[in-house]
Length: 361
Image (cartoon, rainbow, N blue to C red; front, side):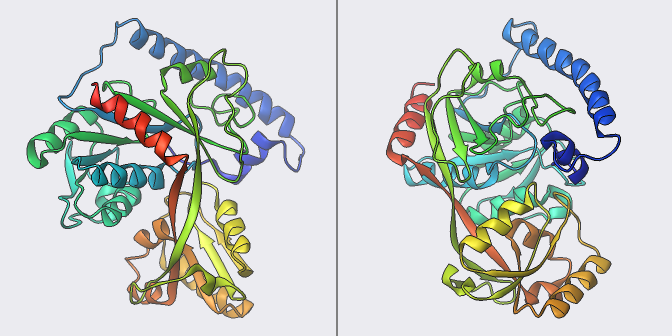
């Protein structure tokens, strides 16, 4: 699901009130009522067994969130896949393939050896996951049961990781891991489109673990739910600066004192910029694009112009944006990417709980 536009974010956050905002908020609030009703009825039908889940022959782990926008699902999926691989399991990653143009029910993005599809067909996040996980198959398609069967039958997967699947209730899962932003866990408390919530707080009863991502140190249970979950921190850890020309990874200290032209097409690009500033970069120019934005020639021209005008010594973006810049190899060679990983704390406790769930399934 797409991240909200700047206007919607302003209305959600009550930022910079403008004439007509109160009316727009009232309209959005009215529209959120039928949305909430549909979500409630759908969940009730699944909870009561009227709508049935399909079950696969191996354990299934879901990584999802309650809100639209980025909470770090992709680096969390990568971290969990690596963790399972280290424990001698044979995971596969299943993704919806948001943004990909293919209509095939099952697409093998990676066979564990090679990345087989472009981001145009598979979507940018599945390709990034595939490039980051040698030895682990990545499959996309709208039906996770079909893609899960393919992972088991073709690649011998013995555990499946679903990317962004809290709301995908058609498939039984053994572990539901829910990510929330540590600073704005439930946004403004309203459901779409008045707020960022995809589901209400009671839906957390389906979860097994909660992970707060971002800068907050708070891992206490969410208030108002009448229940608690094992809670963990997910910290975005900068790992290095990747050269778009050579692929060489430089230490993050490379950014200190650099004049940076920062750009990104992700859910919350301001978080990316804050991270760069924390690493000592001097951001002399920046440009935000919508999440999953397909770059065009005019975008590239604008970015080059902004970099030249600002005196930037480095053009820097995210690895996810780098996937979408492969259409422009010359510009790709001029650009660098911030590589991040998700550091889970406390890791030993998280690992033990995760394995206990999938061992008994």
